[in-house]
Image 1 (tube, rainbow, N blue to C red):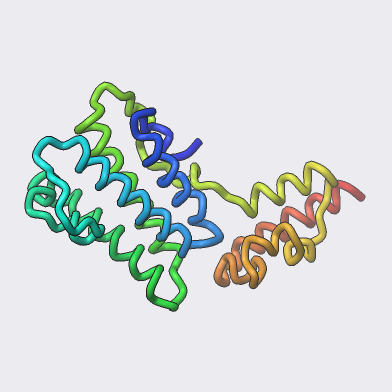
Image 2: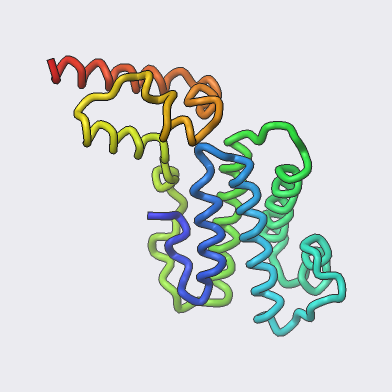
Length: 201
């Protein structure tokens, strides 16, 4: 279940964009930042349509909308700073060729989650928020899900398969690049493979 499952039907477009951001945290941090910025834009435009104190300005760029005095007065300062962070990482992902760290993508989506929670609490207070606490284990794990599918189908999987489609489709550099040198991930996979191979023998 997504961390954004608490968003009600009235905010479906925002939920879709936010879920898209969450879905790319592992595998494509840059795409995560794109989607997070897109979700932020959806939130901002929603507020301009529904908050009585806001009037859409002539300049409708995201930066201009965020810095309208009436908009800044509408949001608590901490919430506004979260919006600014999402905008910043989104802009950097678009314009800066440097690799985007998974940590930064994760932080952007967590800030988006806080922003969404504030939006629901403030404007859709009747919506249930019992299960709205952020949980890292809800982040989609595309590589792990693919491995499970392979193991379910075959009972065992060669480590070399991680460098072939569909796994290589997650990142052109293969799993080494996908996990940026986090050797403990591959240690766990090797242990899993060894255990399964022993069982199969």
